[in-house]
Image 1 (cartoon, protein in one colour):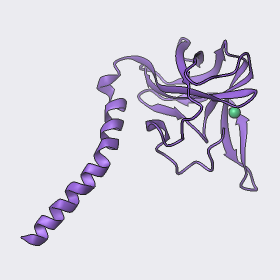
Image 2 (cartoon, protein in one colour):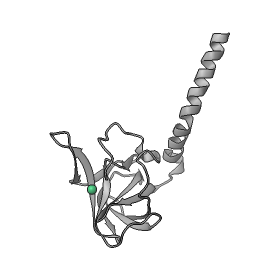
Image 3 (cartoon, rainbow, N blue to C red):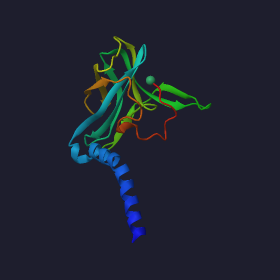
Image 4 (cartoon, rainbow, N blue to C red):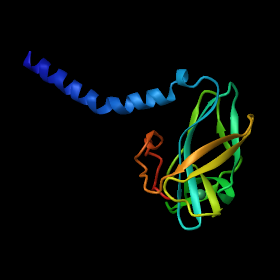
Length: 174
Ligand SMILES: [Cu+2]
């Protein structure tokens, strides 16, 4: 009996630790919360001196496979789809994504720190915390989608649901 109680208590403790994360993910990614179309979640931007990056999660409920082929913003001269890849020496390199980012129907894709991002080059003004920038994604297979990203230069990679998969991340720049 005591052993059973201990087991139950341990199970309850484990559940209480993990359930907030699970609930969060389920809530935000469930198909029922996303009727039709393209959904952009949790968008934010960061900047260094001359360049910035935009992060978000995209969810494709359009009924068709789509590919993100480009990005535009008034906040910078150039917006490009970038990713990080490890080179032969194990050094993370940032590069433009060739051929766009496919998002199959019913799936989501995270643009996140250390991975894919919309790179902003030639910022027209410094990106200060709390500023809102407007970003438009261009698609093959869907009409352009415009969304707002809030500047949060202090945000850590761990914040928010888009950053839970650390297995593929070598580091956290930009
Ligand atoms: Cu970049």
